[in-house]
Length: 290
Image 1 (cartoon, rainbow, N blue to C red):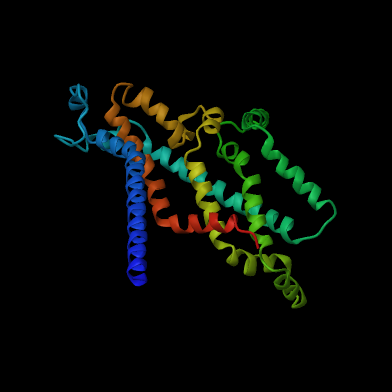
Image 2 (cartoon, helix red, strand yellow):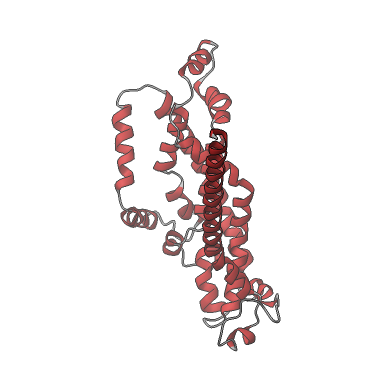
């Protein structure tokens, strides 16, 4: 009798787990559809002709006569290729310089001992409390006074460091046992060599995550490039969208605009899909103590 009761209890528990998993998967599927629908609508609109789009009084969720002419126009009506090249230069240079700045800074705060380190780090973190608008105003005034408007130097310099990324790396570096550092010093290893050969390889997931997040940040940068450049020769893809809208396709040619947005969005989507595991691992490691 007891065996029968235990069997029934086990079956009831298994049914509850199955129902619970089913509900979770259904909710996740619905949420995924909600999140992905804007991307589907963007792609769908980009393959509609201008005439068919304007004759749709009721939006259609499937194309009747798809066309790729909008993608051709996105590269011929405006210098989208030049915007891509400018964005690539800005992204690569900014990310490389930022890594060269934040990695040694995080190492110094995590491993080196010097007078006033804790106070300096506290003051450094306090910079995160300053609104971005105030920083933009200060940077704009400084870059203008240095006559660096409409230059890659003016675009890049204000973005070559990040308090948050330094803090994230510092927390990761601090998790590495001190014994490794002391052993390396006994062997005569310099701090720079220890950083490159020990700390950077161990914390590679977080560094990869920081790199990818910075690339995404640079690629999507809009406000600062819009303020500091008024020469189309230095436009990025983000603020070039406005130029596309005003001087390229016109305000009413939504399908062509959507084609340009798809072309601009593809590199970031591919980048995220390739490195999604590293991003998750780096964020998880950054939030783990000990």
